[in-house]
Image 1 (cartoon, rainbow, N blue to C red):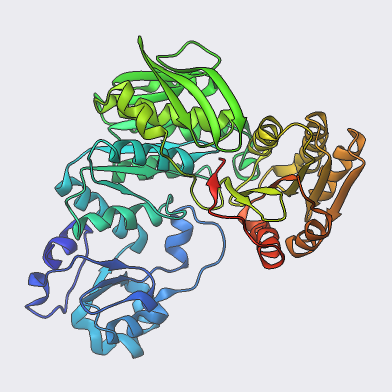
Image 2: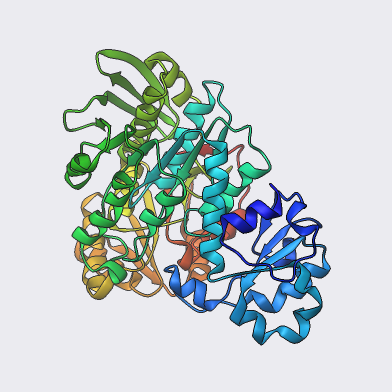
Length: 490
């Protein structure tokens, strides 16, 4: 892409650009000055942009690092004029490489949309209150197994910055055949609608609507409306893939602008799973039905929630013309994303399921249920659960109730971690778990688990990134030796 086209795409102004600047070819776009290499374009983001685009919190003004980026060889720097005025002394000598915009994040998103339009190939978008990353990875895996080169977002690149940065890879690598993109939201500021304006989905996958981000959205109805923006933002004539087992998702069919493909286990759906058998960790089998066609799947992931994720991926595969046999073969070879249900088998004879990336009431209970269903007969079940974030004013009561629900599932040992983890413990004790204890943080929880774990145990470590329950896993790995390669549980 030539810088002249970039400037036009973002409605930028470069009043003192050197004559050769518009002809400069660029293909890499960076928001971290430490990553800038010669020829890159640096977008200097500042607090006004973050606030305007729905990001909570206080952020550094990257204009302070613009000089560093330009000295590192950046071809140009995109920034707000008012931020330039505050840093004129250090940036004035680089005015021939400065591009001024009203909003740097909006400019980044506009550039991503321009790159998407030039690429002009299918987009599959995935959203839901839980399971987005796993469903995205399963969908990408299924489509890749058909010979397609698939672009997917990495890590948690599912917001107003990570999404455009993922799409901008297409400027350098346009040979991708399809993009599978996770779209997240946490505020009432229409985040998913904004992402759909960058890349309108050809296939819009809706997983579930759960009571998460209540602190910012206020009600489950508001969450459903925010998630529905994905279906509302899909391309005319596209395909909406909807979870028939979630009534709020099923109701989104009325917003679809094209075909609707439903999937489910409990309710009637076009893509279904039946004859589900769980033999142990990484040993789930089920019959996949797509319309009247069927095939048996040997699925390496555990839990009903992941069978639903697999059905969502199968629905996407079907929309791209794959046969049931092809989809089933692909699903038999999947693996879990890191920290999302990976199985760690230790030489001491216990098994740990590491699900330390995110948590909410439904996801926690699903994982505990999975642990109980997959555990060998007679094994002691142990759950280490971090407090759940952004649950609003009823957070304490919700944690207490979930602790009681965990007890009903028959867990033997329970550790609640940090903050409202004490309410998880209180609810678990009231529900009948005698060995239930509170840890002030994940470091303490790791020490407690290292002392308590024994041969034959099956352990779930579940928590949000904010609670850092991966530190519990770190403690185990420091004290105990792994038996072999990790497998996938969730």
